[in-house]
Image 1 (cartoon, one colour):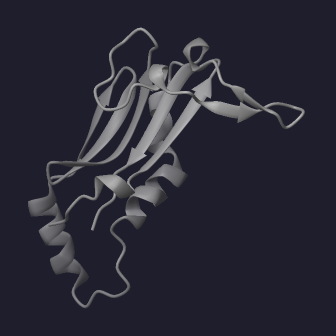
Image 2 (cartoon, rainbow, N blue to C red; image 1 turned 180 degrees about the horizontal axis):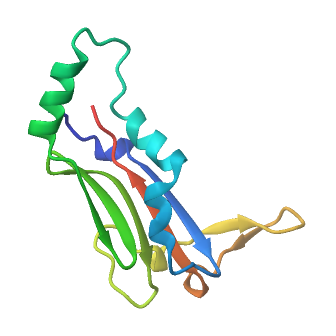
Image 3 (cartoon, rainbow, N blue to C red; image 1 turned 60 degrees about the horizontal axis):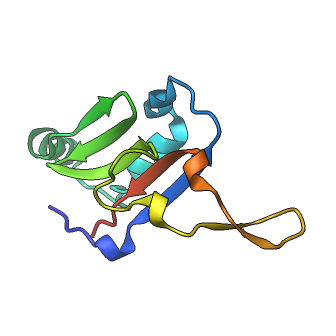
Length: 129
C-alpha cells in the first residue's frame, strides 16, 4: 500500500505553559484534516467510486483517542500522531528531557530552553511513499 521513510518524517514539538483539557478537539480542526487528506491526494481519478470502495474495504481507517493524544491509523499504520508528554514519564522513541533545546531571547541571544518546566505537545507526520 505505502512505505515509510523514518528519516523524512515531519515532527513538531510545542512547549506550552498550559494545555487545555479538550486538546483532543483537534480532530475537528479543518487544518489538521486538510493536512491528513493531502497525504492521499491524486491529480486525477477516472473511477472515483471504485477508488472509494477500495479505500473503504482495504484501508481500515480509524482514530485512536486517549486522554493525552490522538492517532490516525490507515491500513494498520500511523499516519498522524499528536500527543502530550510529561517530563516524569519515559518516552519510547525520543526523550525531550535529554535534548539541549535552544531558543533566542529578546536580545536575539541563544539560550538553553528549560523544556522540563513546560508541557510538551508533539505532532508527527510519518513520511509516506
